[in-house]
Length: 292
Image (cartoon, rainbow, N blue to C red):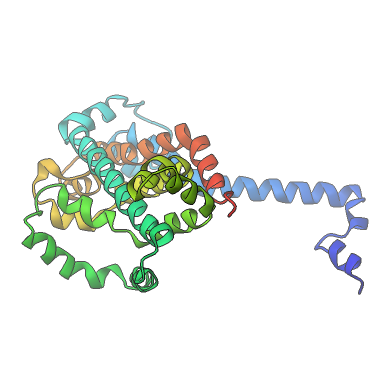
């Protein structure tokens, strides 16, 4: 078989594609696959949106019916106030914001040390950081909790911000981005009199905006959906995020209000992603476009 024949070989040959029934059948199959994928992806979200503005009786007895008792628009407002979804949402936003700030500080400084400063022990440190990716989180849960407790960070947001900031994955992807920046830029900055701190602040960080956008988005998503660690550390109900608050009220709250709260939990990050998707996708593309 020639290389040209191998390149043109596919499930449907070019001769078959010239036949109208084959083209129509292929188009219908692709369309059906896309429709099924859309239903599988959007179906649960659409059902949750319907249940959020339905009565408890309608959701339990007729879960697929479209509002037999009418649309209950007040469910979201009631959930926001009566079961504390509003307060928990603000807590979640505060936790995510603090985690993003601390994560950016740790990942950029760690990547700067490994990629630019490169001390003698940098390969050993990078190996140790990489090794932590292979350690299951459940193994480090108890010693991490005891450490946070001894430092006195249980019950406040520092107990959530600091452990989440030490992400080996974020450090390594930032380090890889810094490796692709030409070393001549650092040398030119040093010749002009910039020290290590000046190179980091005035040269590296402005160029690192693409990878910082990726780190911020990944950190926000991980922080928003985190459940176990905030449950252990944040013992006060007034400081707990949505994931923990919804779990604790799931046995006592009315189902319609609970589902409305769950809808708020899902729709807020989705709306934020839709608003910033262009910037995120541009940053993700630019993060791999820097050439050394």
